[in-house]
Length: 233
Image (tube, rainbow, N blue to C red; front, side, top):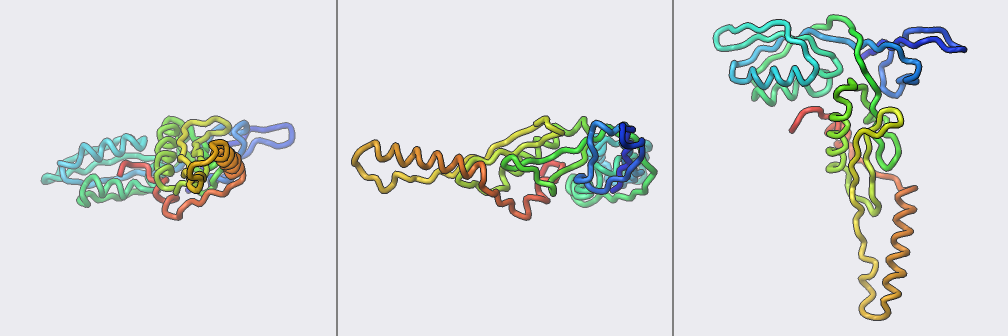
């Protein structure tokens, strides 16, 4: 997918238009004047009973309805949709809500201006490039919250707390925290002086603080695909 980004001039550079293929290449937001995203014309054929759910799916993906006709108990609906909202899981969602009975054809119809932003996902305060997304500002918070919630369920617990955050620039728009596994360091202290247990717990607390700062978080491969899903399961 290609985004056309119009950059304003600076003291050292002239205004120009660049093509972005990867969120990692997103330019400085202070230079962006206009972003154009590709759009498609989609034609969906479906039994009448699934039409309502399909219309909602298209509307939720910023679609613009252009036509609706009925032929022999089946509906044909046409939408103009941003390719950004379709490319990942739209077809899977369509098949799910129609129980496999809907069909989908589309063609590209050019690019249009959109209020798009880059959303970063931070795991343990480090950005994960593979989870970065270009999203429309109007759905960024909802999309970020959904990704954080899914990652919380997908990333295994460690011996330290793991913050998961969605951010646009320096602003955090969603956050979840994976609780730390509790290791019983006092299990061997049967009876005896209570101060020994306190010392062990204090040592564990300091160790967890170091792990939280320097520890690497393992993210399962399946988490990358599952986290990017936009629809409900």
